[in-house]
Length: 164
Image (cartoon, rainbow, N blue to C red; front, side):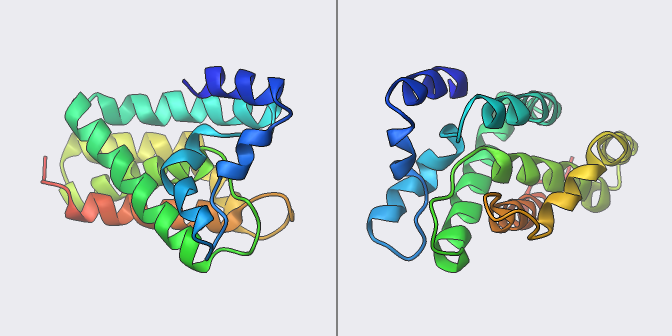
């Protein structure tokens, strides 16, 4: 779905990105559920695709219901926090959701303390621990706030989730 929306968005000159999160504006509220599906271009979409598939795939192994619950929770909580506290700029992309998946998987290992959750958490840290550099406000066009709030939402979601 992300790729289909990106192709349409590209065709219209990325005008759909105005439906991203624009913090502290009434209009920007629509971006909370929509922003993970909007991207700034092909490269942005491509960079989000692999971690979305891998990390989302790890979560979906626990069941489609949990995957949908976790995804919705991360989208709403991280998007709401970004709307409240983010800098005044349009925020788009699945990065917040990806950071949320990362936080959820690693925190599940901590909270569940089951062997399988701990192993998956360590594998996730090994493969994707480098994304934590995305929490630093280095590039003005990168929503580090979205990354941070996604990570926090994922950790909170793992804390609130039923134990394995």
